[in-house]
Image (cartoon, rainbow, N blue to C red; front, top):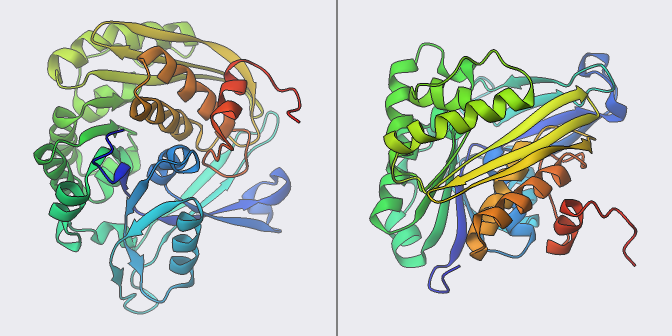
Length: 352
């Protein structure tokens, strides 16, 4: 990380809360629910913030809302600097923080997630809410990470941030993260926005379906479900992604096969202009799968910020994702680098 830049990582996001039933119960069964602050982008940023790198979050809050106070305190507790407007709720049918209801599944019963995003405050985010010259020009940012979630929620805001990042020499990471429900009726608009952001990105993350559905990159049928076909499909697509988006020096994806809700095969591919690093899928135990992909991206970006080679970044990303799914939170909160490297090495012995 350059010592001249204040922030290692910046993430724009729309914050919400997640409700998870305790004891792996289905959400429709009721009972006690655990509450946590959540967003894909802050899930990614948590790896860097817990490991001591300076992280900045740009978001919007609902003025006077108890969830707003909870979210702000939670992010600050993760070591993140938080900035954003507080918007008037506008009455009980006005703005709010999105609610994510998710049970973790168990054994043969898969996880289920229900997103309730009506009136989401993050949809109101605008570039004019922030002093971008100060943030990017005076304070400085090494990497800005965008996901397809915030890009679909606030496309104009994300485009303006990408333009500012380019102007001030900030590297851009973009996890395509396609969500069909976000794109319905907006395909033409979002295809243009995603293509513009991807064209400016130094790091692109997504699976073969993401690249086809978000960016229109020609690819194979998504019918194959085994990991070998997924690996081959992604490797086959890389050359076309590079031709269409030559700025991207690093392209990555995770590989996952679900044996049951608590047992997965977990792998990854990281491709650079000069080499492809493939991590063959290994079996991992899963407490809660939500956030595993974000953990991978967070570990990958941490390695990039530390100046590691791509192979080492891939390993750290794989292990950070494996850490995330061992926790009830949907983000990884590593104690130190050694903890993540122990996961990569398969060392689960007690550390005294």
